[in-house]
Length: 282
Image 1 (cartoon, rainbow, N blue to C red):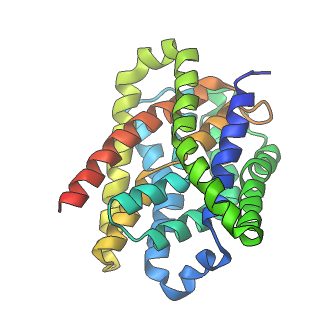
Image 2 (image 1 turned 180 degrees about the horizontal axis):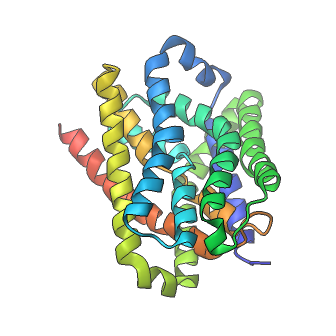
């Protein structure tokens, strides 16, 4: 068994628990009050991003094994980090939290379905197979349950929750960087050999995803704060989730599939930090 999975599992569970501490049941009800921005964000995250990843991957001629990882990162919507970026960009934080809550639940079902389609499409060239049922169960255990526990802790111990959240919010981002660094070191040969191709394709994916957010916000006539939030939510993906799926012995058990997610984690933060800086100036 790959030893790094014992690093991935606690980090992903920690990130999901920290997300749960930010959520309340009312965060799932924003769809009823403001359906247009929620619909725009969910369409971008669940439908547009995987399609963009597929066509961009084909256009750049990615190898089948990297194609699977490329689509995988596009299927995993950003966690609580997107809420922080929305706040920094002076976006609609309530919308960001609601989108994170809704997408985290919906993608429990959509990630297995989309990845089953992607692996089937290129599987004959890689001999990679996806145990859909095991992926679904892993998502329940590593993502859904920590979120539920976080919500329950916040409801029962409100004062303690603030202190826990204050600590975890400082740990979450360094933990993700640590995870990406470990995988980078372990797979440095594969990453450095194809960094030009994968780095370019990942950057194009992020930029086109953000552009699609601008387009959907314009079509639905959303406010400036809502638009900035939609752009960040669509452009920011959960690298920890993608790495956990790729490296899990229950699912792919293949660190190479995680390579696009590692590069995505790097490029995503660079591009979004630039976007936040521009948004704050404007």
